[in-house]
Image (cartoon, rainbow, N blue to C red; front, side):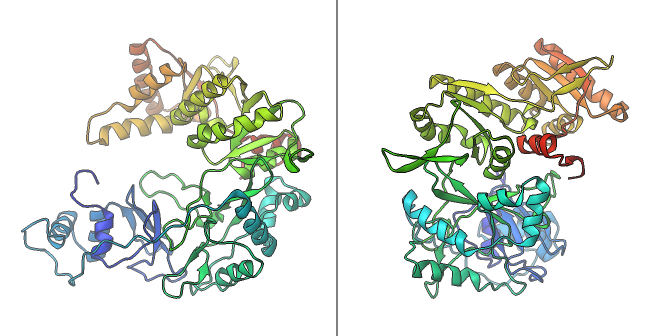
Length: 491
């Protein structure tokens, strides 16, 4: 961490644990249990220093010192002194004898330049044609609200799952078949060469649904994978679940390639007679934008509204910069922002979407912000609707989390006041303390509301308590529930 002269990379090197460089999160063989199910069963986030073993051996936590202390049965203080001594950063005598290890930087593997969109489309199209969708994944999609025909039209397939012994022949046979069909693999994210035998292969993922990202010309230019439910782990410190999706990437591997941010067009396409290329079929001059390709696919299939799916809010403006000129060329003059409704409780998302709306307006286009699950009930039982442009909601969990974060911060910070200031800057001046129901009217929550009320008063901002809960988070949930009777209360 910042206050230490070393980080978890240094400890991994001391322990002789190798990993692929150039990544934020890496997977290695667990040094505690050795991996009973998966060859690389320990995930390590090199930035946050969180680590977790999926086999349940108990090796999980955060921080380089804790990682080392767990392995050697030391206290945090003893582990710190050991690490400093082993790295030659201290003259203090080691508290624990360890085997001598060579401290050498890991060699960076040569990376490939990203191939053209046409090359990627040719290779990915052949890849998807070789794979099938498992019955388990098919059932998952049906339960989400897709029909069988829609699943086929979207082109979803299952990624080869790594066997218990860590060997999956498909990871080698598929690239070979692609090469036999004149497909290029160099510069196509998701493919790389092995170090020793220089053979093309794919990353050892634990399976999931492969989602094609189709660009303006209906080419597959990128791929995302939706994890299996049992492979999504909870952060041991924050309690939050990790992301469900990750890119089909080979960054950090030999001749590998990182996955660039792509826009996914979920819509019908037509042939442009002049250019002889496909383009989106947009009849009413409007297209909606939401988070992720699968969400966009389901929303489009149910509603008929053309959508663009973007991997995350931070990608919004870079993607729009590339795509707005293309959209204008086919007569699109309005963009509807249809992001998840938790945007009214997440200041980072609220700020990103505010900037996106301003950017869209600056391009001479109209912008709409679509909302749902917005009914709030006041203590007097009167009802009102959330205005996403002026309202911001604190839940008890979010408010308590901000207070704890401020108390535990190395530098004293008031994250609640900071969030209120950020709300002011984007026009969110109506602040609400949102309880799910009357059972949350506890003394603890009353105390939390008083804290929020006082901080709002200092800033001259309105603050009231209401009853509100997020029942349908995404636009796909909304359409599937309202138009196909999918019960999301049990999901």
